[in-house]
Image 1 (cartoon, helix red, strand yellow):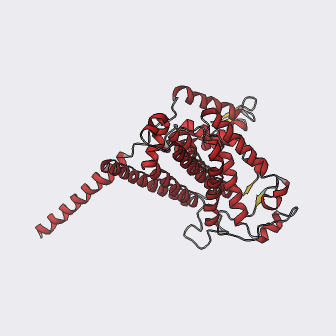
Image 2 (cartoon, rainbow, N blue to C red):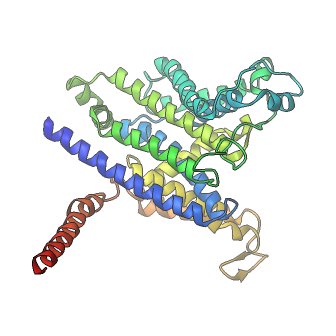
Image 3 (cartoon, rainbow, N blue to C red):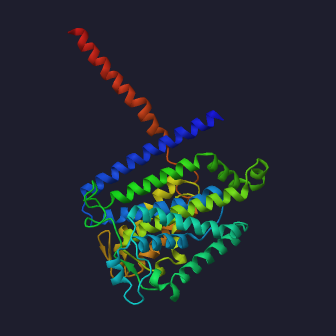
Length: 383
């Protein structure tokens, strides 16, 4: 038992080192590039989608629950953050038709936490009846829940809170003139996203490598065997569902910050399918696979293949061939190739080989310091 805890601790430490190195690399990119550059824009959205994809992977990949309600929890997180952090001056301009009922303003970090908490609360309520279902029935039930939430947010009687079908805007975002003013990240635009998402991913890794995570995997592999081993199926399924929804809510709030405005129409079922596609491409049951697939998916759809819609690509000017919509055709072919030849995704259930990171910090660095100390001691002996 102690050996298992020790291995989990070492594995979590390797992940922590990996996230620190990734964070440092992205901060350097953030400093070297202006906030309006395309690479920063892609990295921002990719970072947000990475958290949402990993949150979905907790359910689909590690617990084996096929849920399609991610867009609904993102909507809850986005609306909670926007409504609770907006100032009264901004509300007067945004709620110009219906008026507003929320008159207090919370700090952005409190709004971010409450975005996850509200999504987790609704997940608890919906999970009581829904988690008794399995497979396709669970997917249909959660998908219906997300669509009900989207329609409910546009209900006329809630206009003073959600503003109906009119967009919400003018809430705090990670810009130079708002909530980062006076901090070390004052001139940064990507760094806050990476810092928040890295912290959330680290918490997810710690959970997956704990006894709860091992229980999730046991339920995924064989529910009957897991129950025979003493695992409370209902409790652990509910815990997985709530945890996934909590981080999906935070991801929805970060998406609202990234877009600077939100409407209910942005959280359609196609958004859930997009996140599910990222999880499948990266590997169902792989955290690093979901992170890598998020950046690749956003880079391809938003940047690398965009020239196919404008008539030129890779130096070729073929306006009669490359026209609007052709980008998605090529992108669909790429996805089909990945699904056909990498049926378990890019990473499968594996993670990046983090042993080399640990090997570098436990073997190489100490040996360098030892050589340095020996050299210094040799010089002193000569003197």
